[in-house]
Length: 280
Image (tube, rainbow, N blue to C red; front, side, top):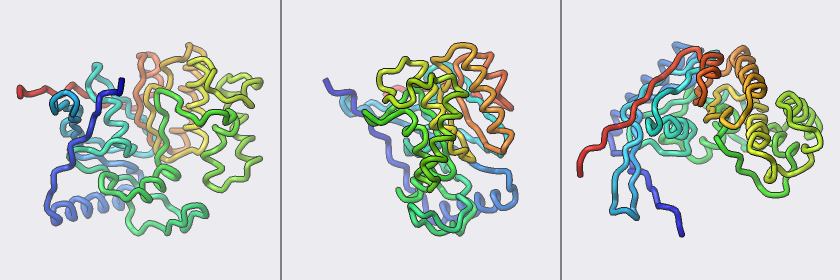
């Protein structure tokens, strides 16, 4: 049986002048505030279930967020409030149905792997970005830890965790040394490092996922329930790693399933509520 087909509703077309004005205002905001890393304005998201008569499922409605260096914004709200959907919009996995998302551009002159020239604008508008721009943002700016580990079979844990650094041009030996240190910090047994993680326990897979997401020290981190399968000891390790990331200036948005972890890591909270569905 095939899963239900879900297709985003395309973003309604606005005038070129309105988009240009919004982009100019965002660029000014990033220039005026060097700490600003991400700005979301009026972000909405609706899905269409094509196999169920074209039913519309609203997930987000006009969400605003400014995210600065050194803070951890924790998303809170009941199940179905759109917390994971918002993270996926901020990462570019979901295309917002409306609204604008601007992310501070990577500060680099040239990348040896993607050949991208230094960005001329202080920010990139994610909802209208080219695939090349999205890849560059994910390599240099946006880090993401999902709820589940999706990996290529037969790739060792050490290689998997080191890969984000290798893609940036870091020597393999140095990248794997950093990966080993992070895996040890997260209590992943050394005997597992040369094995593929497909057969690991849920908690072990989640810790590998966290190590891979944190190793490159992205300026913006998006964390989708990274501690859901962890015991109290390992939740404390992850909370400490998040605090260290904040200390080096990372801007973080996260979802955490337990109140203790939320209390430990949050600098502020953004509450989301389920979007009311109107009758067809």
